[in-house]
Length: 588
Image (cartoon, rainbow, N blue to C red):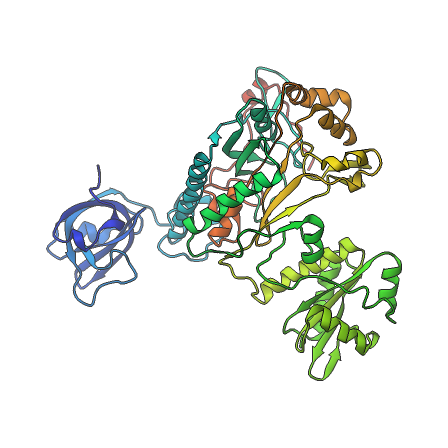
């Protein structure tokens, strides 16, 4: 072994002992002929001291940041007044007796010892250096603790971990597949799984009953801060369960895990609140509401039923709604600031934005001259608005009003710092629509995925009004993010076949793509359901990071490129010939 102890574990109990340490030079400094080195390994830092009489002093004085050293020396107490209370090893230091350079390091592209603001492209190119930083090491350790807790918890609750294939066949999950050409089957392709959906259902048919997997998944889609082309989820499935059985299991897991892995985080409530999809969108303007703060959307159409404001009247006659949002303490917004909010509202799809500012001098704003005093009084009673507040109105179709005010709600959340980052506001959203109309293709699409069980009482609506069919799907949301999506699955061939048909899939394609699943349902498939919490997004929230790239060891950038390895890259002509592939590049 290159070391007898880890750097971060040396304490006053080791004083007088001779230890051998190995690690990286975090900092090096000279004080009047005495050289100090902060030596770092995964466990932390310890101060190394080389006095003028130390062997190899010249070599020690010449070491630089991130050189790899092996040091043997005696642990001693730091001189009085030289202790570092901010460092776990701050009471002691190691007096060098022997020092060996195991490997020098070139000048660094950025500082490791400081968490300075470095351009992300540089960090990703030298990711192996970026990962040495304390922040990144902390994120990797947190991710490890989260996954370990999940495994231990599910093991205690009767689950078994089963690996499913990475090379499978294309399955409709809402994004493009990554295709893998087969050399031994020319012209044929595997697909990397967008999720192990069919396979985990088949495991329930196989009698596994309680399955889980830390599953790697792949989706070829446009990237955002909380998306990656490959990601990791806790995939789980259970037999002989109803919706609330699955929710209780997952809620128990997360309620126990949060204080165990991040003690400074607090749950907003336990048990978690449950909202229907319609309720979530109407109250918060989103099916993934951030419930750490109020500012709920309020329907005030009845208050303005007899309004003189023609915009309001026209909207109500067209079957639309008038909804508002109360922004605390922002009545003093300038005309330019209100104009900027109006522009933002139009970017969300609204026709415009009306405002009322409740000031000490009276009511002001773009809707001031159209609103009667009794309407203002009714508004204040309904919404709780008080002097100093700004009321924002959107009069439009319900979906547009909800979306616009929902986005304004989040804008002010960030602008006014309304949400506590240490508060974890978990909630369940249930009763999603089963289908959504695809106007471009003039057909119905699955709102969740086509393996979701519809509400049994809605089956007669398949042929009359698919828009009213509700699914037995559910989402776990937290702090404005969708953390997991799941459902009770279809386990009957007749229902699954009918849904494929309603989605416009031809019978030959149904058999080619899903024949194995439909046949399995004819061999005693049990009722089953599950869900798949995203691990990257969860760790991102727990670590207070702005995007999931900060909690993934080797992520892609926003263009889906690995800057460190320069991937994806071209294939050789020989590789393409073996795969029977010709590349048809787009014309420049």
